[in-house]
Amino acid sequence: MSGRVRRWSAVVLAVGLVSATVGHANGASRQSRPPIVVAVEAPITGPQSSNGVDILRGARLAVRQANAHGGVLGRPVALVPVDDRGERRFAGRGARRAIERNAVAVVGPFNSSVGLVNLPIYLRNRVVPIHLTSTDATKGQGITVQPKNSQIAPIEEAYIRGTRAKKVTMLVDDTANGAFTIGMANRLRRRLAADGVDVARVSVKETKDVVRGYYARKVARALATRPDLLYVSTFYPEGVRIARALRAAASRPGCLMGLANVDPAFVATAGLAASRRCLFSGIPAAGQLPTARRFTRRFRRAFHTKPGVWGVFAYDSAKLLFRAIERTRTTAFRPVLTALERTKRYRGATGTITIDPATGYRRRLPVSILRVNRRRVFVIAR
Image 1: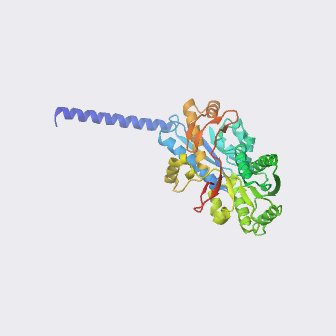
Image 2: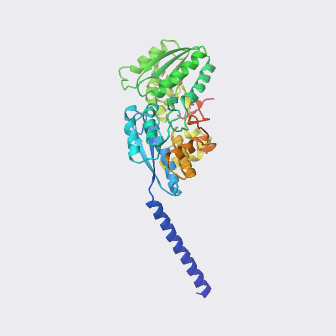
Image 3: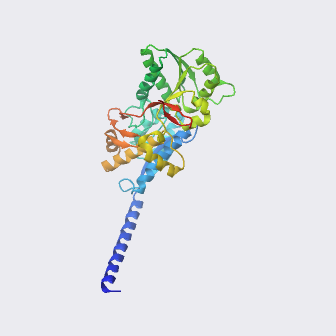
């Protein structure tokens, strides 16, 4: 080996050793730094678990991507799942779990009735909420990239007006867990009444008492009012039973189901014929959003299944949080929340996101009237 070659080999070896040492030191340094703890709260178990698991996976994908690129502020992100089962009675317990784990922020909760209880708890304990609730009663309690009642109701009203319905009968979940469903029905009822539409209402509650015909009786009572259109403001498990009862009934008025029924499990449980009996207000699954194509591919690679509707919103929520932390160079409550409130023209998987700082609401959302196609997918109705 010539002297020049020996010297070059020595330089390469030295550089390699230094690079390896620096890389090891940087990795050790990152690992020794405390993680940034972020909670994700959703109905991970219980009747709405298909949505909850989708939300958890969306947030988890964002965390994996952040950690694969060195974390946030050079620190790893640790995700704490908080399962509230979509029930108000578990709200406080869920918030305490996140607070005890020193979470700096929470993606969630999803259910409005839960958020009414624990969003104030998170705020009092200086945990930044990027919530997924839709009731307008949570206005100003953190930010959200999901649609609110006041943003959904005009879409529903425009659809109903287009049908020229003169009589609408509502089937409404007005139980303690029905903050969202009650709020949607009340808001839409006021708007329809102002349009001169006659509105009747039938209360329902979630029950497994299918054998005794509970939902069939409620549907029969609604149909007895002879409506031009039925509006169903319930959650997915109830909506399935109502859809089945509607399919079995002889009367065939139009049917519009509210956003809380848009769940891939709806079609799997109700069956195709019953699912196609109604239209739905809401947002199609991530695979139907042109802006979510890359997210959909990554989600399928990570979890070996298709994403649903709400996981992509949890993904964007987590990505916005990490961006706010990086921009403010801190995890402190007030600077991070202010940065989130000032979000402008962020290009997310759910589309462009701008937050109104006065409300914490997203300014524009992809809310549409949906139908179930023959491939059992929620798509925009044409």
